[in-house]
Every structure is written in C-alpha cells, then in structure tokens.
Length: 186
Image (cartoon, rainbow, N blue to C red; front, side, top):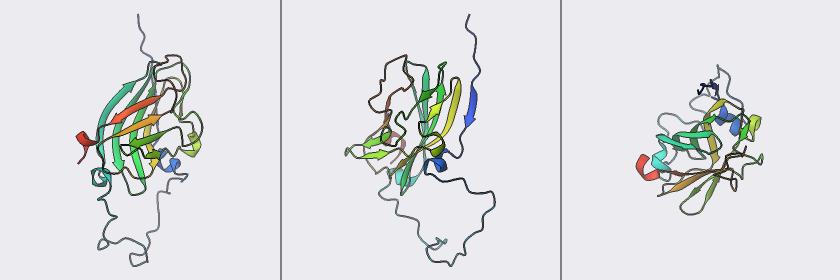
C-alpha cells in the first residue's frame, strides 16, 4: 500500500530579487519626482523591446520534466527583459535527501543557450546559491539569467551542466529542457 507523503510548499517570492543580490523593497517607498533626470514618465517611451523574445511579454509555459531521482521540474513562465531573462519554476523534491540544481555555487553551471550558441548565465540567489531543495519540499519562484533572451528560433535551459540526467541516485540532477520559443511567443 502506498502512502501519500505531504509536501511542504516553500514560497520564494523574492527569489528573483535575491538572485540579483538585492533585497526586496520595503512595503512603502518614496516615489521619485516625475521630472527628475532619468526617471521614466508616461510620455517617455519604454525600453526598446524589438530585440527581446516575444516583445518582452511574459508567456505562460506548461512544461514538466521528471528526473529519475524523483525530482520534478516544472517551467511555468518565460520572459525576456532588457537586462535579464526570467523563468518561472516549480521544483518538487520527491527524494528523501536534499537536491541541488546549481551544484558548483556559481553561475556557470546553469544557463540558457540560444540558437546562436550564446549562453545566458544563471544568477543564483545569494541566500541559496546552490538552489538546494530539502527532501519532500517544493520550491516555487523565478530563476533569473543575466542577459536578455533574443528573438530566435530555439533555446535550451541547462541546470547542473555535465551532471547526469538519468541517474536515479544523484543529489545533483542534470536538466536540459528545450524551450518552445516558437509555440509560446512571436
């Protein structure tokens, strides 16, 4: 008889800000005067989005990849911004041990590679640089990659480069996921 094991959900709303080494802004902030130099006003045009994938608009994704070690990675959204690319994720650790999606504590082990061969590297959060998920936990948030996702035909999300994608005993699962750029944008 199988017993259902409850999973705790770890909400990581500020994962994107932490990834850039920033603390979330306090609840109340003081607005800069609209006539201050460098401050965008309604009359000021937005940053050029012509070179951004999907014109800079967020696109929903419904991609799920189950690793043989019991980790399930779900991609929920994708957005290209002028200085970063953001991927919405939900990671369910079905193992009885902690797993890490960025095993070398740097930003060279996770990236998005585009059809030109260019790599857009992960900016891991300072408070969880290895992207560790405890046994039986779920991590939900956004992964931030340094650089914009250009308009293009294909891209692949890589987590734990050179790690095994088929080892059921690994605590550092490797993922290589094709991002459906044509189906979700443009």
